[in-house]
Image 1 (cartoon, helix red, strand yellow):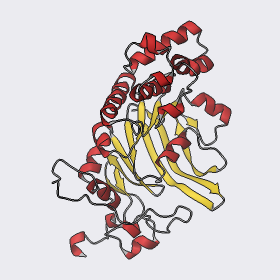
Image 2 (cartoon, rainbow, N blue to C red):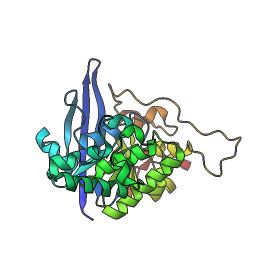
Image 3 (spheres, rainbow, N blue to C red):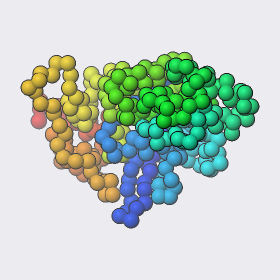
Image 4 (tube, rainbow, N blue to C red):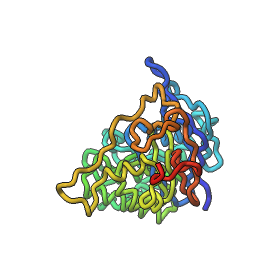
Length: 331
């Protein structure tokens, strides 16, 4: 499959009055055509910053790309100017944001917002734009598209606004679609419909998707590969089966244990992860999860573990995976 996105050793910091926030610390990942990569982890772990840096949506300053490279369909994103990014956004990569009501202009009709990018970048006529707007609304399964295209965002329900946002993101047929927690503001029934819609669009258009979410149930149903992030780093990466059936980093195992399952009895308590994430003003020298890890060793606190390959495409950053580390039953 064609490689759409390659991120290599990306470091992103934010300069603030309190000092430098090391938001992303050496992230590497790839996305191929038609693939769904899910990025999971606690709030503040760097998921959204990583995704937004691909589109250069983080204001610079205070954000800084300190190190690393981002290659999107052969384009060097780190070196790209703002004028070049304006051409890249929408045509090569688009984003679906969390809350569609705050991301749509309440004074413009939905159809006009859908085709704004087409008028500016594709130079289509008014008639062609209207035809494309109807096609997009039908693609995202909004009923009565001929009437809805002339309505305002406040006349749409929450689920329909999110569908319209997806249609806007797909207007210029991008190679990569970034969905940043696209179902957070929706109820459970609508969440399922939106995820089914994204899966349908992936099948129809072969668009690659980066899915940022807290919902591991969504990940299990939709993703091909999963990147688990903690404190600005990818601590484990693998296909869905590897992550769910053979989690190899203590943080990944802790996340999975915190979820209810069909086998969970009513009187059983869910397991929580003790402690809090590290301060990214002063990241720890060793493993960032060491202070919360029940399997922490002295080595973990002073030395950052590298990525250890487990099988094809599955790797994790933990000293317990070192070939010379004693097995659990031996220590």
